[in-house]
Image (cartoon, rainbow, N blue to C red; front, side, top):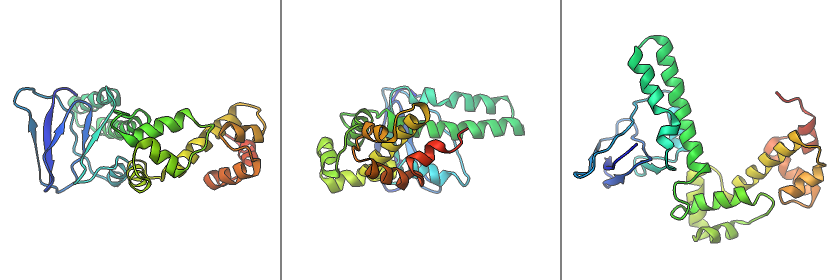
Length: 229
């Protein structure tokens, strides 16, 4: 939350930890951490276990070799870690334990959302930089080579980093962003399906419908006609 320090997990190297940084230490891993001599730090920490831990470890793309994730400014405060501790400081009754567990789940989900939606430093984060570009250019199309060029990386290296961070290939991630926007347009406007397709970069309505069906398992018209809520 403030200050800076360092962490070492397993046989890995000592890594600097600053404000708005997430450190994930897998179960059973030897580790050490501490503050810099000149600047103390304020941290939030939680020990957790359960079936969902592996899932959060995967979506946050953290391992014993890569335990540190940089987050956007203010992420720790916005994620609500203080409220988790407030629950536990009251007492350890079942209602408070349930509330603390639910808040921790939400905090981790929010940190992952912030990591993807608001990259900590788009200049230093090639994947985050291209995600921002995708979000701002949903009406355009781009191949892997073009996205890799925007990231300043080879296609193979960029694809590996992107999949590690998001769980998807760059092209598939961009497609899913487009389909998500198309769903919003189908839900909230009376635009024709072909116009919705054009709005997300596909002038061929048949090709758009095929891609939409790949993600949503139904055609755009079937999606619009399906009950919501």
